[in-house]
Image 1 (cartoon, rainbow over the protein chains, first blue to last red):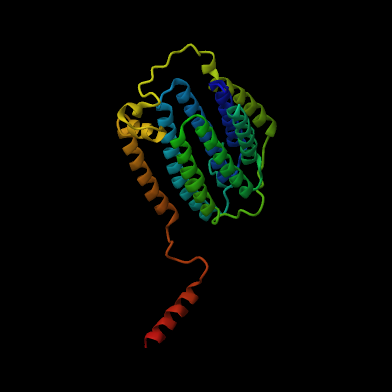
Image 2 (cartoon, rainbow over the protein chains, first blue to last red; image 1 turned 45 degrees about the horizontal axis):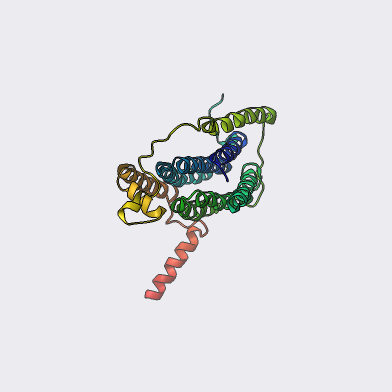
Length: 100
Length: 196
């Protein structure tokens, strides 16, 4: 029998993978992929906790996370296309204008 | 037993696929691995009895979000490998590893508190008393009663995001990037000749 702990540990591992991706990525598109990984990891945790308590609220929160992720991708990709038109690259080293 | 096998198959495949997403140098490989990993994640939702959530995950993430990424990929050069300059990878791996341990402990902390008695206001099988069965009915009932206002706010947010996406990406969409001004004039002249 798979308990809630298995799901939570898996969710933590997936979140860490996404976090590592966010830390080391320099390309903006790849950085977006890493954030998607993190959002998905959190969704697993929500669903697992909701299942453990026998409550539907966990699933509800996962729905709203999915809605937020969908709108984030729409706006983010629009911005990425604009940045690509302006700089010809999506590399953070090229795009960054603030020195520090 | 089947749950056990299914969980480990999904767990190992998602971990490997997301590792490819986070560490691959090729955008196409990363995107394909992300899409496949999201399909595997929907498997967890089905295992957890959240059928509706699993279907939404498949439709919204694998269907819509990944299609959006694939379309956006047409604007960028996806075939060549990405070169990323890492100033000092050792510190990234040290910090990342430390944070990874913290996250796993944080996420799995509820294991210790397993004697917590949850107060479930909306228990699974909520719709059963009302003559309906299944996860979709449960979700519908709760979503349109307690979570109605967040649901409508999410709808407005998606509308705002859609308009923002169109305005940001669709600027000067009526000008073709592949045809030059001369070609357009030539085409106009031909149309004028034909009408004469």
